[in-house]
Image (cartoon, rainbow, N blue to C red):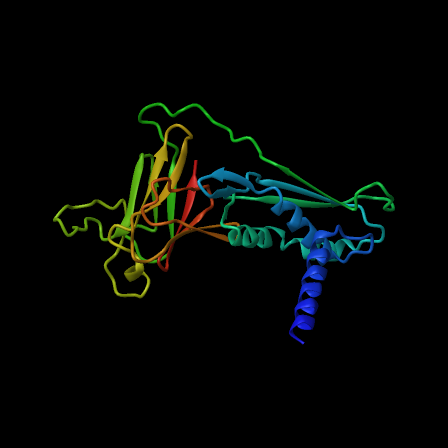
Length: 261
């Protein structure tokens, strides 16, 4: 009995493995095409040394040559592509780009061999490296308070470092005073209380002419919301996270909006 169960289990695993490894047929459902796309993208993961893995592409183009394909169904299923890809890369403990853009195109005409039913192409868009900023010159950065109470509803800065926290001049355990450019008021409203006294800072990188957000180690999380996606800013990460105009910054339950330039 045990040998028979072992054979049944082995056969089942072989069928499952074959289902996912074999290319989809001309009548494949949209979900099968999505699964095949994820399998192909997984094969593009690269080793980066010391046990690290990376997915080095930030642009994905999927082409489907399927006769009678339903564009509405394809579009609905492939909207999951970025989220499903990030989930799979996370399972592989693989580093992913901060932003991934994917597009899906249906190829006109009937499918015929040897034309591939599914084509997945990956690219890395070049990063523009503008000239370093001259000393004392920084882009205008506007900080608008969306949720929480500050001394001002909006701030404007042209400075290399903008400190954010609760109260204008908090004192740390060693008696050192910090000046917060964006200072949340010391009120008990359930929102301001979630902002640390030295919660975060925005710092300008003159080489890339970009601002980065740093989490100073507050007990409450620091995140960026961009295009409906939340990007967590790890505490005391020396790299920080690059911010863009239109980003919302969450500090505990408080929210700021950034406008650059």
